Image (cartoon, rainbow, N blue to C red; front, side):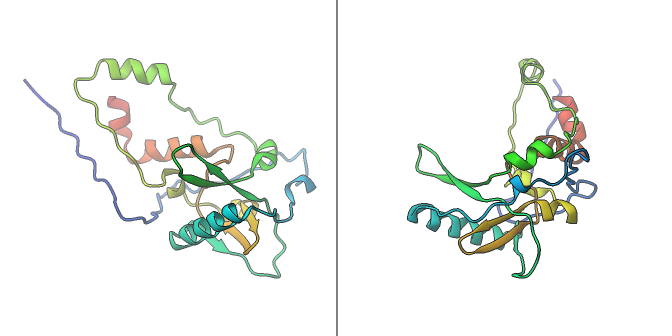
Length: 188
């Protein structure tokens, strides 16, 4: 009997890495100009959300996911908000719905769940891998950074890494995974 062994190294340090060839670009529909709808003032969060935002901003700056924008820079901004889950945890999400309506879709193929389940039904062994802040392993182009700027009560920040909530994030993430582990993904 033959077995194939696949070893995954799990990164436990909270660091970000550049994956060559996977810089994320956001291309806006040229028929529509950059809309005033995307320019928003800082919202007034509740005291609890304000505290959570400060924690997340610091964490993301420490990880190199966010960078502070200078005071005199002309920027297009959106506001982040806090999502609270039933288990008491929360996450900061950017309000990118308006930007997403002007973003040209990336049609890179995403695996369909029924195809994945069919592949898994033939497997003798199943291994899972969790990538630390997976979407945020993708770096952004300078243009994308300008479009992914958030404003909060404590300042203006730009994303340096792909955030959750942008239209083409799943396609970009799948492209990155196909670049890093193509054989493992195709073997099923």
